[in-house]
Length: 74
Image: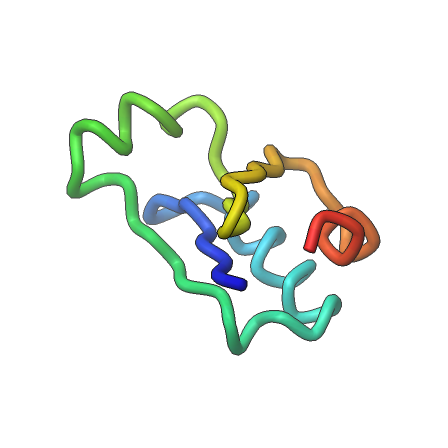
């Protein structure tokens, strides 16, 4: 299982999402992906961040999500 958290600099909701992942015990396995350096990612996730993507399967959780939501999706 791979987890990617799509974020951007200065996003307070992204920090809250990171705290949820810490609470769920998954912070160590999450890759934070900055969308600000990639036009395609900014187009896809710009209005939705933070977004947690779970692979395999490509399930995406848009904010707001809680620890129980993340655990259930994994």
